[in-house]
Length: 101
Image 1 (cartoon, helix red, strand yellow):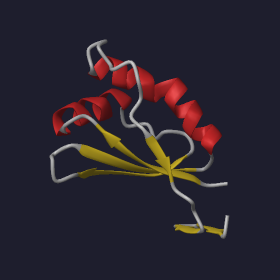
Image 2: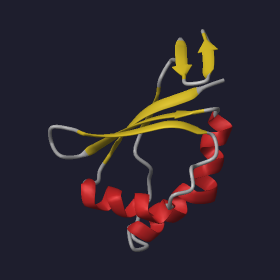
Image 3: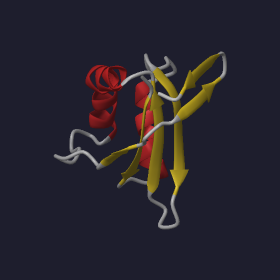
Image 4: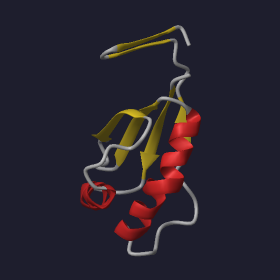
């Protein structure tokens, strides 16, 4: 079942670019889409779509937390930003149709 969420993150573009550089060019297993948008206060918001909540959790455990830790220079905040899951009714992903999940 597709898993998607919105997350406001307390970082700016420069730190975001460092995180992305630390992740490297290899796609994250199970990630279907990632959007990073700038909000009016220059903070960022992520919109992520994953094959499943398990794929998302695994990616955070295997790669994302390590990349964030490195980008923050080991001073990453103790808590994660709030994740607001999206109630997905229908998705169309190129080459794949997930209907009324």
